[in-house]
Length: 138
Image (cartoon, rainbow, N blue to C red; front, top):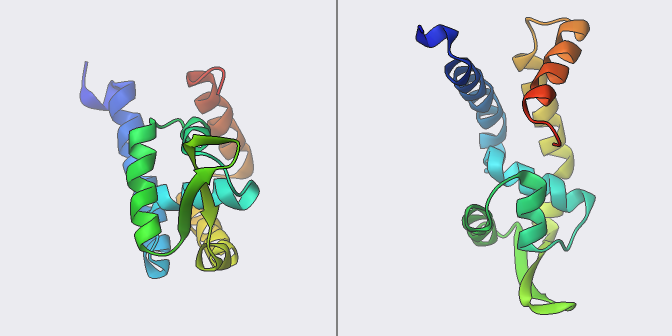
């Protein structure tokens, strides 16, 4: 099988291309795509635990911990003991992290628009539907 016929290769190539578009839009704000994902979760529901964030993002906790450590160094979040379970860490937005919601939301809209510029709405909806079939239950 040729590489360009291998599903994994085609998906990886597309993901890398889209990732670069998102990264370029987010760099001026000092945020990576992974950090944006965490911020998006916290804007929706501030105070989630590391475990909850990992589950929402389909990442392991150690990966999320590394992202959170860098975000804390940037002053975007703070980690505290979860009042419901002192063994768990609760992640809270700082004012700086909260203030990024509007500019980052616009940056993501721009990145999406660039990524999808060669597709019409029907093609985009079909693509989403097909990708969801590859990850049942997600």
